[in-house]
Image 1: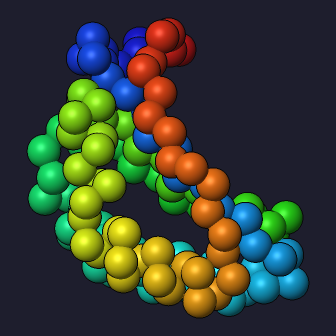
Image 2: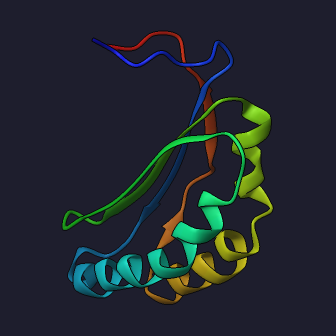
Length: 108
């Protein structure tokens, strides 16, 4: 059985790349920022799911599912995300690609 999603649900994808030899540093940073990002993000309305991961191949992602694009865009203004976490990630060598919100067309 699959989960029912609101008709306007979106997936927000934030991706960064880094030099693979810096994996341990970026992975530790990602764990560290979770300490303040998790409570800040959980306070936002509309969050359905949030996942974060770092690959030894030199890539990191934050993938979240929101009930609407308006709610997904809250992360564009969340200080803990755009100032604190982004600053720590860039200090660890991460370079970000543009963040994109995708309307969900289908799911399994």
